[in-house]
Image (cartoon, rainbow, N blue to C red; front, side, top):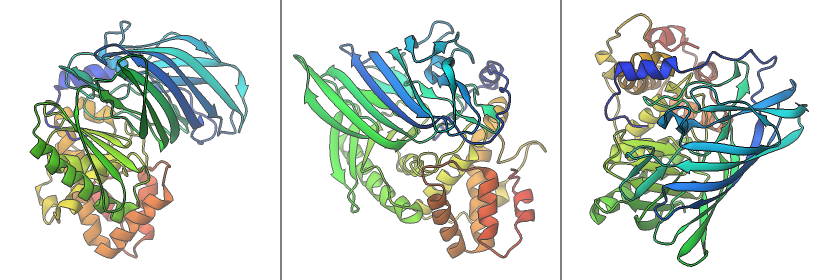
Length: 446
């Protein structure tokens, strides 16, 4: 996400306080449930602001430790007042639900019997989504609905146990494993519905259209609904780019953003590996307070070339190469801002000279728990200091070594999860220069 201004410290502390303590540690560190496959069928009201239907998910226990329960993250319940929530799950099958926890953003479902390693199971439920007012990543701006993080997704259990972190409005809390989605959206024909994945439209009942979106190897699914104006083009490497704009944005602005989108996708792919999704949707509204927000194959953005290059770099850093965004936000935001500098031809010379730490506890590698309590420093440290550190790393090991490091690291973690320790080890392996003091100086722990 590109952040245009900061929430207050009081609001950030509120987010932090609403969290839950971590669950007991899993015995092994394997990330599970693995290989989630989501099937969703939803029907909207006339304005696209309410969606009702059914969701099911099949998954496998990747861990040697039995899986006795799973958790669904209902992230957008942050936007309601618990227990009055915009995302409602009812009629659960395949397990027994517990009351909502983590400020109504987590739903524990106890499985009928423990799931052994490599065994699969499915759960299903009826789903209702009511989009709140406001130009947000989950919000309604006039006739336009933006529906990010609304589908319930499986939480991850790893060496730290179940990840039931609080929602962060300051940044992201999302931590998901690569999944497949088949999503059917029944909506008025007057509404265009850009979505993650590749979509096919067929006629529905009178005045309605059925959009079937298919997305493989993505971390989550987002969509929008409204009377957008759509333009389509294709990159030199064959990726279809769709730009959707609200009526207040000019065709000239949309054309400029289309050019940026195509150029950025080609440039990022050249540095980190070919874009695997075939299609990318760019949804433009200048009322977004946060500037831009990334989802797989789908980004929300204001009219800003730099913001769009940033969000599209997230397709690699967060999307293809995943990370635990609550624990290690620098692994996607710093890398994405660095990629944006490379795209814009910014060398970052002397940018580390402007670094000024506020306390000994302030570090680039800090978690969102820290940044939500020190919200005014999040953008400065994670985005600016973080990218400056990567520029310094390039200077320390050499441009060619840095280029190879990032491309090889992306390849090694393609559709996987990156950690700070793994990146540091990969960087050290890419050079004969001892990087120990580099990490200390740049306050990157892990």
